[in-house]
Image 1 (cartoon, rainbow, N blue to C red):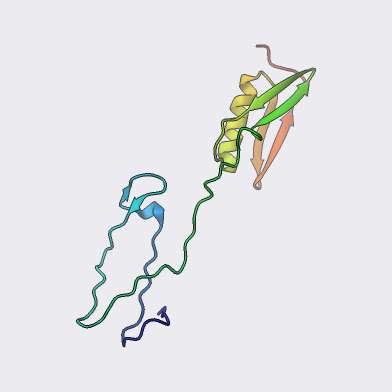
Image 2 (cartoon, rainbow, N blue to C red; image 1 turned 90 degrees about the vertical axis):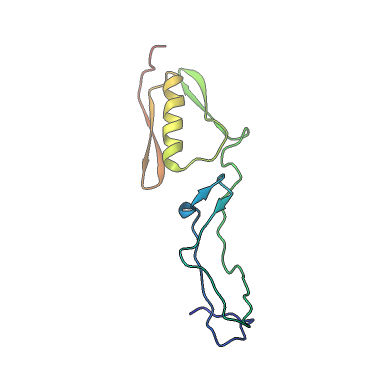
Amino acid sequence: MPSHVLNDSHMPSQAIYLDSNDALVSISDAEKIFYLNSPVIADAGIRILLGLTNLTLANTIYNFNSNNNSITFTQGTTEVVSVSVGNYSASTLTDSLNTAITAAGLDITVSLMKKMLYLHLQADRHSR
């Protein structure tokens, strides 16, 4: 059982693991409400110390912002392709890039293989 230096009782420490995906109520991506399956109860005369031993936070800084969300392609003419500002996983970035590239009329396909993005180039442009 996990223990803590401030636990001076005869009772062992207790660890409770929470995952935001398992929250009963999700107010927003950052605000969750959990209800425990079993209440935490202390015997008479025992004080409870609640502490945080580990926390994992999501990266809340966009990995694509207005300074890095465009790619310039040149196939005869120059086309600038942009994705919306925001956070992307490899798969959502692949989808967003392919949508933007198709809308620009380019014969380029982005694919995801082993967590790497690959561009597949064709010789001709789509007609607009």
